[in-house]
Image (cartoon, rainbow, N blue to C red; front, side, top):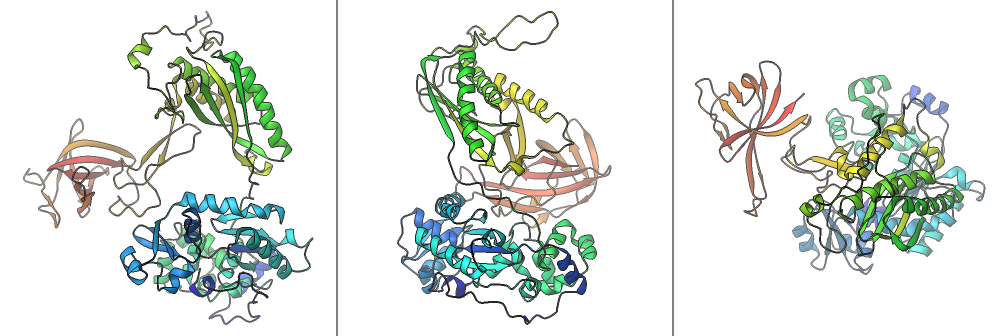
Length: 596
């Protein structure tokens, strides 16, 4: 948000300023863009934004007064500050020391995205009583289709005034409205509380800087925006003048999306907000039982109750949390995905979870079902568990098919005393439609979930990415159909990380990098002492190096000797076309990645 807009004293302006009929644009969009806009149905959008939301949310979470200056810090820089902080000279982009030098009483809070989402979701629920539909674009920003307001309000201005009054009275937050033909234009208009007349969205966007694209997705457009600026396309209007085919050929799909935004055309249809409500059922088992058939019966009853309440709300449950509580107080919680809203599917998943948990020793997994620390008690000795008889073993019939564990034999020493179910993910019915061309998705999921039930959640892992500097650090393995929980923020800057593309195979194999005389290449901060010509890989042989990059040093954790790391990286290309990522650590060369 701009400083002028964010520092305005009034919460709801008495009358929204309207963009001029003839905006002072450096260049009008081409005729082709105007004709295309006429052929596209206009969906007027209202955007309500809270200026400096990260600072507002952090102040609420830490119990600060609205008059106390506060700022939010991320990656060593101020990314948001409230009005009292700006009045003292604090600006975004300053480091912590410079900000506190300008305002000694400034409270600097580390950025926490969970706080942004949680605080906004808790307060914005009042909109559910005011409008039929709304979309959370980001923490602090909500969009409302203007069409849903026409039936109850005479004009857009009166509708916005009523919404601002209701939101301000309920939350105490300061909202700035923006109205335009697209959500992107309305978002930019909310910075100055402007109403863009119908059909004038392209003219409103034309004089705005090209950096306005980062308001949609700062990460996605981080590289495109500087490139467009270097090409002389410093305004959205200049970018909109280009032909769409040429933009797509030069900048790809991302550039085409940006071009549509600059022309005042819709980019995509956002997903509607699902009304905040907790769907949870719980049932004690008296007496406690470890029999999976008894657990399945109770799970089917609880599942029917849970899904019945979800259906009554007009929603679809696609993920369910299953929590089992043992008599010792230990718990096992897992999140399962549901292809269909069927209580039998919930019963199957609970039975598989109970079988794997009890057969492993009663409570051998953690609270999240992934082998972490348990809620209570000490972990039984693994060697003692392996000596116990196999309660799940059954005779294999002559046809060779595995019948699975006998439900009458799966019983824990302590038993399960309570079962809890909760809807973990709720969607609108249209958001759950599957492709007609999917081949046997349920059968594949059933098999993988069955393996997890028998051998534990870590038996089936899904690869992903997380933050880190080395290729091995960025690997993230998540149990099948569970939410990824990265240890390191993938959106953080991570200076010194390996640039894209990433190696397709990650390893850490000692190798020899030699020059033409057979001497080991020495890597210094200033570069290599000689040109590498040979790479000797154990088990593969010696390959000739035909090209290589410049060596670059990476030093991390230098402030702590126990975690300090220093290495020199080098990318080489072999004679057969294979590309490798090398790293020299502690005087030794290692092969840390192979490129496809």
